[in-house]
Length: 214
Image 1 (cartoon, rainbow, N blue to C red):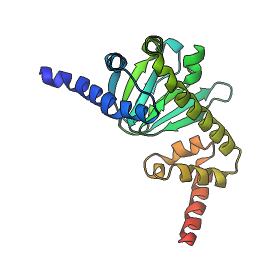
Image 2 (cartoon, rainbow, N blue to C red):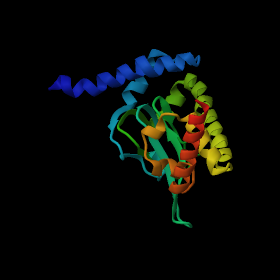
Image 3 (cartoon, rainbow, N blue to C red):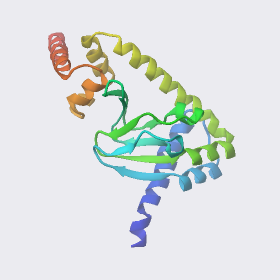
Image 4 (cartoon, rainbow, N blue to C red):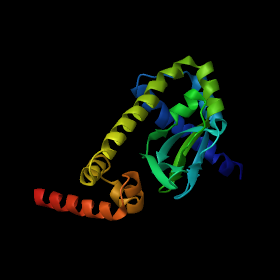
């Protein structure tokens, strides 16, 4: 029985040492053994199911950083004035989910984040992350790799939304060629801020043009 109870802890340590740490070393970020042990002790391994919310909007103090090992996650928020949902981001396997504005500026989180398929993730809460940064300054080298992708995606996403529907669909499929078979058309249309019917027409045209190129 005890061996079964320890399985998540053993897997958590394996994922951090064999998956996460090598990725950091590829970025020339080298952690001490004490730092790695702190991360293992203060992180949580979670098996998450399709449609499960891994984060609800709310107070800064309940925020987390997530390393999405497997699965797809979708971020969105609800606009009270228009009573509409607006997408913010899609995350795929081996990406980090982190609200840099909330963490760095101690701001409340506006996003809900929902899984679009079953997955596995590692989480660490903001308080433990702050202690990690205070105790182990070498971790500060990771911050640009968290903030820069966020800024690049934000710029790309806003520019994409300025395009016509046909161009939005084309850009989405170029950058996410496998997602069309993994997540719902409703979610993709919401992410592209376009009606589902417009997505279907633009996608049909995209496939027709692709077939002509063959």
